[in-house]
Image (cartoon, rainbow, N blue to C red; front, top):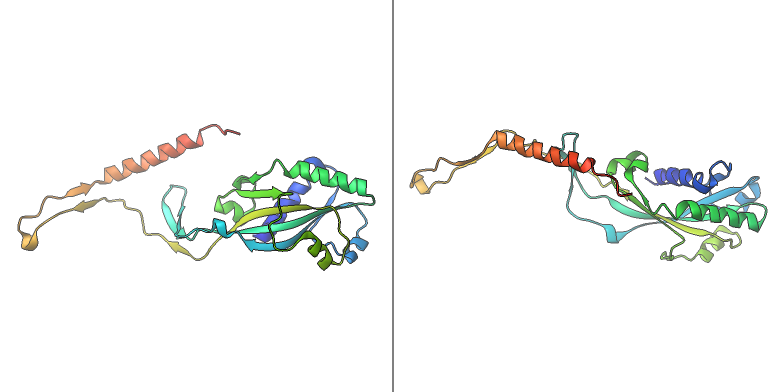
Length: 228
């Protein structure tokens, strides 16, 4: 999951206001040795903190549907993790670094929510949107000054970027087959007295009608215009 978030950020940071600029995106720790080795302008996104967002934790299970909207498996709700990145710009002059950081802000600020269609791999399969926060109030236990001290470098202007991503919970359980023949309920007294009723049945054609109604509602929902 973490490497897929890296893919998302590499695509975002390399696009938007930086499209066609040729600026490289690096995920290495911005240490003194790394800074000495670079020989071109770079936007660095260093992952410095990973922790669960317990406010999003859910209990129970979630159904997994197939293309016919039939429940085929059940799984636990995903666990959400806050991935905190230290975003910095590295060029020869502070003015150019500030321009790069401004371009990064212009690129990321409109992207507060990443829809499933823009996510790769297992993140897309979960069908959940991923929130993104840039330059917000820092809530992690370590300050940016402490992070720079641990990296052995001098404090630089930076953006705190937080991506809250879902991580699938395992295992998944197969669901029972769907009802296709209906059911009949009969009520009788002890020892058959009074006699059993003829019963009340849930007929197969009613099951089919309910499935058709669900499909019609799903089609109507898909045809609604996107409010965006």
